[in-house]
Amino acid sequence: MPTYKIAIVGAGPAGYFTAQAFQKAQTEELSFSIDLIERLPTPWGLVRSGVAPDHPKIKTVSKVFEKIAKEPNFRLFANVELGKDISLKDLKEQYDAVVLATGASKGRKLGIPGEDLTNSLSAADFVPWYNAHPDYVNTEIDLSGDTAVVIGAGNVAMDVARILAIDPTELDSTDIADHALAKLKQSNVRTVIICGRRGPEHAAFTAPELRDLPKLENTNVCIDSQQIQDAQARVAELSEIEKDLKNNLEAMRSIAHHPKKDVERKLEIKFLVSPIEFKGNNKIKEVIFIKNKVEGSKIVSSGEKFSIKCGLVISAIGYDSVEYPGITIENGRINNIAGHVEHNIYTTGWAKRGPTGLIGTNKSDSTDVVELIIENLKEPKLSEGITSLLKSGHEVIDQLAWERINASEVVSGTILGKPRLKESSRYKLKKLAGYN
Ligand code: NAP
Image 1 (cartoon, rainbow, N blue to C red):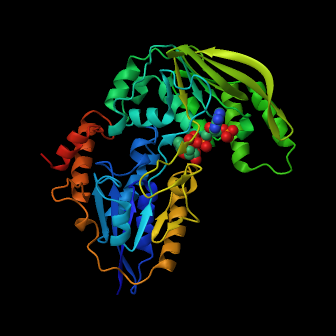
Image 2 (image 1 turned 90 degrees about the horizontal axis):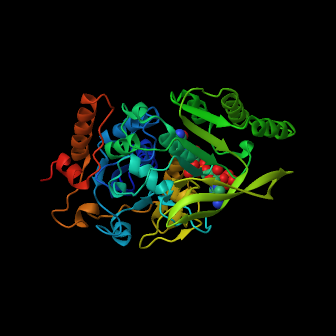
Image 3 (image 1 turned 90 degrees about the vertical axis):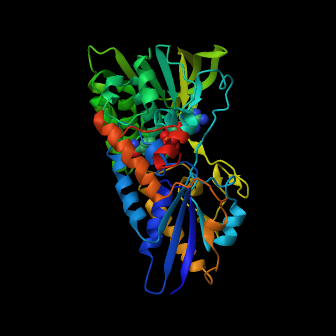
């Protein structure tokens, strides 16, 4: 029975679902040996460093990942970086197929004046900071101002705004990075304003996330009810209204009609406003916006400007994939056709299709790519795979080593009433894994 060697790069949801698709595709005539390669000492990608700490249910997908990892044809090679510890060229030679599930981690830029002022950050830097990603522990963020502006009307903007607006004691029982929780407890931010450039009917939030907002115990969530009413009227004129859109608008209408009184924290969602300039003296002090209006199916500028004084801006307007040797990026994604990059190299997940969809979207995406790979497979290679590529003594974190880290974090968290206490130092993670 031929066994094909598969290298998957990136141990996030797309990487695990690709491994699972290969496992499911095995037959009596066809088998795969799967090596999942990850640059960080820890796997799980955005499930660990992206999903908001107050959304633990979403993280339960990690149980599926651990089940995939228990299969005998699966090996984890964490703490191994493509482009540094191994090259794409070597992987291409050693493996029958290489799947790049490397995601999209670079925050998109607005391209407006003042964007690079101090305390104007991308969600791409802020989210991994509060989620204990080792590369973002030192993200500089000043929470001394009372107002923060979040640009974008998607679920990332919502996560970011919620983390800034929530009473931090509500995060005590979560796995938020301890450095972030300590800083949020010192924060002066009391008003957070999400700014979307289009109307409520075009917001990229999803209804479950919107419905979660009123559950914030100490934060008043505000939306202008007139904006929702206008959006509902526009939508009513459509020949067909999608269920998701209807649910979204209903969730927003409910928020608009149920203000929370006697709380000092506020999270406001403003629609139809585009930032045109960030102003400040080194540090951000003010965002200048232009109001937009809906004309037919178009959003046009009304020409009317206004400003919001603030001490912090976070842009959450999407992500691009990062470039590495051997890979070209086009429109923020790895250049590919239906997941095929070139020769025996493939891509899946956000690296393939851009930063869209929920965690589960990666499952169907990866299944499609695996089907394509299987169609294209030739004779299996007689090669040694990754072990011949890594320098001797390289501190690989394999599945057992990761399980040591995982168990230690869970135990430390349990003592504190948290699901886990995440370690963010690479050095300490390696120690937990068993390296001295
Ligand atoms: P997203 O859903 O694409 O939202 C991006 C937002 O940025 C949109 O409102 C977009 O507005 C806006 N935007 C883009 N360019 C802009 C510009 N130049 N000026 C002003 N606004 C601009 O992206 P995301 O929030 O980063 O989320 C990525 C994916 O992860 C999504 O599929 C999301 O659902 C998912 N996610 C899910 C969860 C969850 O399930 N809890 C949590 C986080 C993320 P336009 O629509 O006008 O372009």
